[in-house]
Image (cartoon, rainbow, N blue to C red):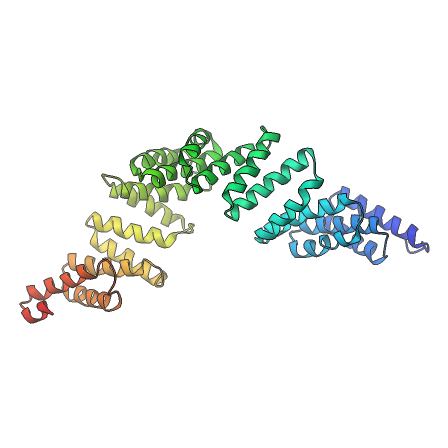
Length: 364
């Protein structure tokens, strides 16, 4: 290549090397040789192709910032529209990696008019999923339905159905979402597990029907114990068992303990809090106290911290550690005057002082 003096020949040779590396998936080499091609100042058509190949390679190398920088230069070249279309689609993917979903949406919208067939269907699916993340649920459902119209048996068909149902759930269209989720939940694999989770949420959100939700989740916890949402199923099942007409505190506690033992869950604060509630309801006051103290040690700024402080005082009271309980109730009331349990804490303080014969303090 160094012996080629004619700029056009040199650019053509560099472009050919890029094509070979691109076809073989040698992404680092694509970045290297596309850089040399672009430095040679090729014609717009070659430059657009080289920038796309460079951006695609950087996307494959998990370098979205560099990919975006390359792809964003293509539109200004005013080369064949195909390259701008491909660039916009890939920009959408890159922006999704960076969680810049508004930019991803705009990129997919820009790409769609230039796409046909399977490419158009794929872009429509990506657009619908992006809009779901943006909480544009009505638009997301429309996009995903359009995808299914063109790819009823496509590779994303099951996922599209799940997210159409989830969009319906978020829009309050429970009766529409329920049969779709019920059918998907009867299946296997990750989709079945996630569909079970959201089917149960249809019942709790629509009717506060925790009994039916518990039935769905109980079966799902056993069936999908190895799924990626196994702990989500356990957590929702525990909550349903705690909230239903006849609570099952023991089973709920076992589920929460299993989640805690796994060490991996986004709502671990809530797990500890609910664990303490179950232990308290089961009159396991020492264990409940330990759970509350563990919660407060790790999540002192959590919105449930006040509840944990009150329950700690209650546990101390039930354990007849009255001097400690008195201090705990007093501290709780001094910092949580508007809390729902403020009157209960004041009553407990009066009760403790009454038992000591401190009549004046009871009236205070």
